[in-house]
Length: 212
Image (cartoon, rainbow, N blue to C red; front, side, top):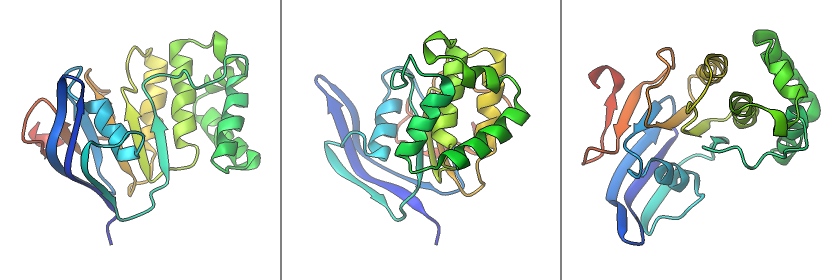
């Protein structure tokens, strides 16, 4: 059975602004979907509804599998400034029931691939550049090898090195993972994307990347 997430007649609004009205969408494992649209089109809102962070005003989110989840939010303000990058990842991994041993194994593998990650891990978060903070954010989201990976504007204002790092880690996710990425800016050309959901165009429909 293919694991999937179905949105049935989802509606959501903010005061004086209707974001979604009775939308139906299905996302299946193995898909790598870009959500694009103007600011205010509802990209972040839709991702948070899928994750259960916020509740739709009406409709249902149906998940036929207990996906392990990884979320990369648009900001990194949940990290602790006085801790190093590594200490932050130890803390957040513990919340996900990931042992320090397993964390160290994964970080060692990534550090061998990307030597600059060592500096990020050893720096206090307060002194990290915006790119280094994104490196830590994607590490935190992917450390449990999630079956559902959701990233909200992960490539905004990134230097080339951090862009390459985030792209490669996302591409390394298992083929049967469901990947949902929101962006209003151009994506790296080598990012593995299979389909596009344009929230500027109604009715909403996921289109194959080759037809976009």
